[in-house]
Image 1 (tube, helix red, strand yellow):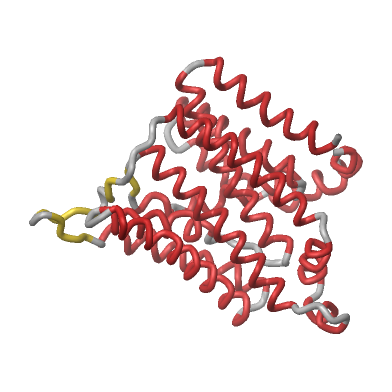
Image 2 (image 1 turned 90 degrees about the vertical axis):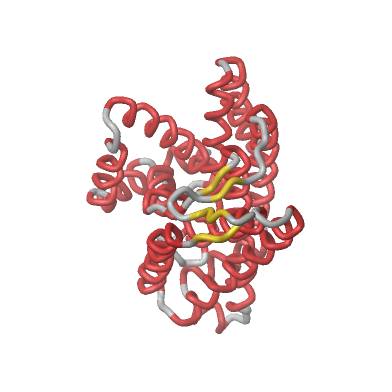
Length: 297
């Protein structure tokens, strides 16, 4: 019954967006994409790894795929899953060579490096240089199709992830997140748990990036922005780490960004900065004051 109620809420938001008009159908697609990013981020958080470079997992597979698309559809299709796998392996290596705190900074630095370097990447297509700050053209899917795909994808991903986190493997994930040494002592294969979790997180983030690129029919260095990496952290903070509430908080943040930036461009960045500054107090309120409410959900 709990899952049915949660899916009903997601469907209610989707249907409201659908009947509100074309713009809101498109906007729900964006909301769903960012909700998937947040779900992906929460998976890493469960194993004790806070990623501040999720923009890499989100943007790199679609970006490399778009580069391949300049030459052939086949190259684009092959490059996408390969880049997802390599991105996941990179984050797994990061988790092996760093502690929890260093992982935050290393993932952030990796994402920032992409944000800085990708505007300088150009390739030749039919004698013309493409890429750079403009980015690359990609498959373009009508926003009505993106709406349907995003609704189905979000529901399936949410249900599957909820089942995983509440399963025996989910228990292992939480144990690893709490104490890797103790987990090893009781026989949990820590590396296996981390690898599977990070790879699944990478797949979800990469899929969200693909939806994003298909929605706009274009991708540029902006997918690696700091905002993209901060978004799931803020959404998770506002939700108290609750999976369902993190979906709703993602919806809220996308709507808030639209509202604030329509008043003054860049105002959402001020909001993010304030949340980061006061995150300990916000976290304390959500985890302590809102504990009973979250448990009911």
